[in-house]
Amino acid sequence: MSPLPSRTDVLIVGAGPAGLTAALSLHNSGCKDIVVVDSALAADSTSRAIATHAATFEALDRVAPGCADQIVARGNKSSAGRVWDGYNFIKFANFDVLKGHTKYPFILFTPQTVVERILGDRAQEEGIQVCRPHKVVNLAPNADDSNITDVFFEDGRVVQARCVVGADGTKSIVRTIAGISYSDPDGEDPTSEDLKLGVIADVKLDAPVPDGGIMAFHHGTFFLCIPLPPACFAGAQVYRIAYGVPLGTPPHAPPREYLQTLDDAFGLGAHPPTGGQGMNLGIRDAVFLGPVLAAHVARAAAGDADRAALDAPLQAWAANRHETALKVIRLAKAGLARASIKDETTWYLGFVPVNWLKLRNFMLWIMTSTGIMPRLVPWQLSGLKNP
Image 1 (cartoon, rainbow, N blue to C red):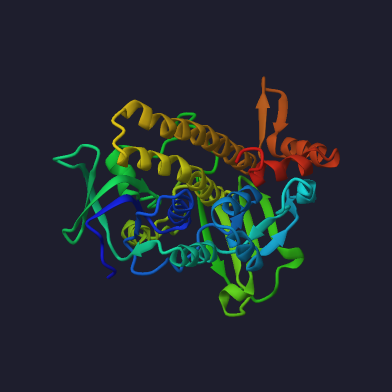
Image 2 (cartoon, helix red, strand yellow):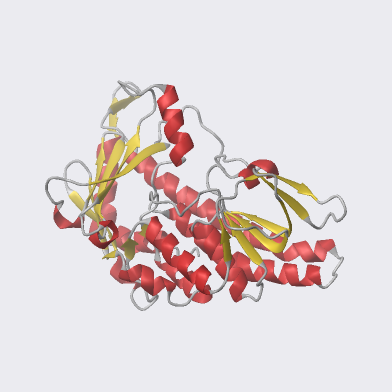
């Protein structure tokens, strides 16, 4: 167990990609009194996201030069995207349209663990403390100074911090104590049949997958199979597979207790895979947070007592990142809505048949044959117009 200081300017809870990036961004902005804590004894060996996008690499270049190039060197570049619509393969993305606009005109497939390892190595080089395993259990204002937060740990230790950054994932204790919950920004619709859950796994296959991977829509769900870099798995060819889970209880479902054990151990996500947008957005949030929070800490340490003026830049950052997050969420929901369409015919007015799957496929054909979708999708996924 690595030692904890009794006091720090910024305590970052969570040593994943977002937490490590926040530490690097703060350090790059002149804030050196930083401590990162994580409840796990070692970095996670299981991977969630596998896709890293151009805007994320561009952001990392600002605060940790060279890290983006290291990540790229350990991944598989993809400059095109195809999907099987049930009848034909449709080329829905051509990342070559990004050439001339970014150093990274592609989507990169590499496990999140690789991204985390590279960022962690850089943090260590910069002298940033990453303390493990230390589990935060509570936060409270300091009794003597309301500008200081007491952070309580499971082993009874207490660290005083000017600022606390919650980067501790889907089961965030920081977010829970702050009363921030996950919710659909457009409101929950109990009648919606759109996909909301997904399963991911990294597997070995008996035969290679052709053409660098498969993405398919099938009767209200999707299937994805993407090859990952063999160097990340001791030379073995491993594939990331993902598929949507339809509404309702699946046949032969495992017992609830077994599923709860998995959830406790691995933090199963309550959302389907959506191109690594969560990790990418978290990294970019952290990059942009660094200079704002560093300035806040410096002014507070200098005795600036104007709380409204102190908090205004942070509030502006939060509003901007919230708007960006809403755009990403709606992009992901739109994609999942298209994947959720079933091959069923609905009769309107009793005599007008409409098959929404065939209508979707026809619209996809129009959008791809005219070149609109292959040009539009890379800009949407890359984040370059929504960093």
